[in-house]
Amino acid sequence: MSDDRHARGFRRLWAGQSISQFGDRISELALPLIAVGALDASVTEVSALTAMVWGPNLLAVFLGAWVDQRRSKRRLMVVADLVRAAALLTVPAAALAGALTLVQLYAVAVVTGAAGVLFNTAYPSYFAKLVPQSAYITANSRLSASRSASFVAGPAVGGGLVQLLTAPFAVLVDAVSFVGSAVLIGRTAVEEAEPGPAGPSMLTRARLGLAFIVRHPVLRASLGTCTTVNLFTFVGYSLTVLLASRILGLSAGAIGLAFGVGATGSLLAALVAPAVSRRLGVGPTIALGAVLFPASMALTAVAGGPFWARTGALAAAQFLGGIGVMWFDINLNSLQASVIPDDMRSRVSGAFNTVNYGIRPLGALLGGVLGTTLGVRTALMVAAVGGTLCVLWLLPSPILRIRSLDDVAKPVAPEPAPAPVG
Image (cartoon, rainbow, N blue to C red; front, side, top):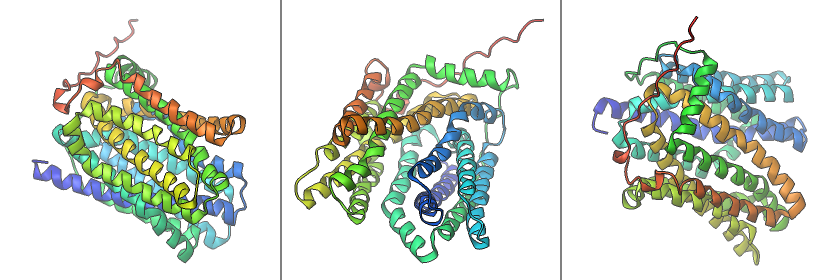
């Protein structure tokens, strides 16, 4: 990044997100362990805990419309981090008092999930002002590399902390990580865009954000591709561990090892993403990642043979899937940042995430139905094949023809709707 001030600001954002990502890996392990171990939750109750985290995304379309009218997106991101920290701090506090309940865990999941939606809808505008367009792919590559590294080392660190501190007090580390993120982002001032005129109501702005996606050829194809991928990969996620444990007969340690080895694929792909994009082009790299990500599940579906072959197939599937998702996400996120007008970033992000993330719980439920009716291996193969069909959204779109972000026209906001007369 050429501007030293922007470079320092991005380094703070990167550091804050890296700390937060490692903290997230701890809570992702600790909260279900609290529910299962300390609170004797059933399978349905543990699944509900996950649903509580994702549920607030269904309202992202409205929250994004509200965020678009706020001047300081940075302040909203800081507030979101502090709210998540405060919610998580109630877990060890309640454990100390002997008052921890499943209802409280549900409340923590909803609050942290809602704060995450606030952070994610404010983030695109902040990122676009902090990072010049020419550096979008490089910046997203670095952020994704940190996230991938957290998946490589985070579960092991989280497991160690849970054993050392117990699960409720391991959550304290994640709370501290959100405070660290808030401090770093709070010190990174950028010249943020002024919000547009108050104009229409929040509901109208939300509708306009969704309409902008539907009418924009790049965003329409992006949403169709992402939603298709998420539907089928969450079918796969709901079945992979079950197949590895019950059908392949792998121990928890072997599954964890395979996932850890597989996560190195994400890290490697994130590091080389800018070079791959320059070589293949942004659009073709998106298409390659979109196919490789879900198709890799087929390796798990057909796994068999001796122990090393079963474990190796699971690791290879995770490795290739990690490569695919990084090349897909890094390039698509950078492309989307290039085509969305500044004064619409939050409402478009909210509308996009409502559909894109809202499909995930449905995918998990579909996985249970397909696994029961077709068998786990067949259902996982259906997920692999169905996921690759996401590329059909890209074929008629302009995305495949985009070689670099320089090819993307400067985004222009649509004309506002006329005010009612009388």
